[in-house]
Image (cartoon, rainbow, N blue to C red):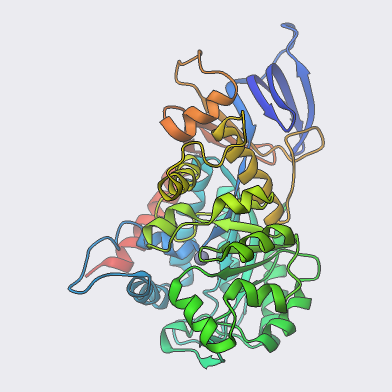
Length: 448
Ligand SMILES: [Zn+2]
């Protein structure tokens, strides 16, 4: 049992002052007014629920900052992808584990307490399955165990290089499965997740370009009631190719051919007509926005206003992992909409704080997309983030979130996952060890 005194605490019904939060065995067991007589183990300026990160490709963290040099020809998503494939082909299981551990540690330090790992690096560098098909998934699970982050593992089904069942190309050989081998992979993943508390296993058909209609129908039953994630309409070329192959745009096709509902998370959903936008909102699916990566890769801007007007659910993900920051993802989302629509406070509802609406929206949508909805309340897992006001005790209530997100003058101080404190004073408790292994892996990968 541990008690944390929170001078400001945010729950689903709003802000509370001077509350003592008790947790035991990983769960929140009490929320009581501080009578002045209670003892407590530590104090926080501000305590909020942890943020889910609904979309990550962990191995790509090894590229962060290394894809910002222009070549002789103009760069694009597709030239970036070529570099990314080169990295993907070269990484050993041990290197993937070291990079993922560094990444998950950085996520925790940023205030993310659950990651949705959209995991597609399955086979060895020659495209052959490992003796244990779940070898690479096991490395992701090990990184989650080492850092303490909650894991929703989303093994990816990937079979083709383009629409119409185009054969996969050489750069994709580590990703490829048939529906039959994918079923075996899921079983192996389940074994690797078994030792992890609060882990969730979903599935991820990679995209409509990588999966045929028949394959999609074959793998969806494997998800049972678990989350289903898919990349969709990230790039204009993808929309054009889908139109050429099927006569429909990607989101239009998906909504017509798959049972999209609350269990689904549509990653990016960048290029949509107004009708597609409204129809996703009505389906109950979560839009998986990755604002920093979408800006970094030049994808485009999510059509937020009609989506939010129809109560569309959304969450945030760090995708390529070029930069890990809860507040910067939310800021980039809002600023993209401002630049696109020439409005201020675009995501906020009338008479509301933009930061609060962004935080609440991304937290609720992200948790649902990762199969782990949990309010900050008695009976929920103690996944908590303490913010340090850095002496600015005049910042109160929603202005705390506005300041953190837009001014960046408030810091993540401590983080607990299932009641276990993993970050203290802004640093992960195993930072030195994890960082050393990451350094070894990076020197091996980039030594030349
Ligand atoms: Zn992605």
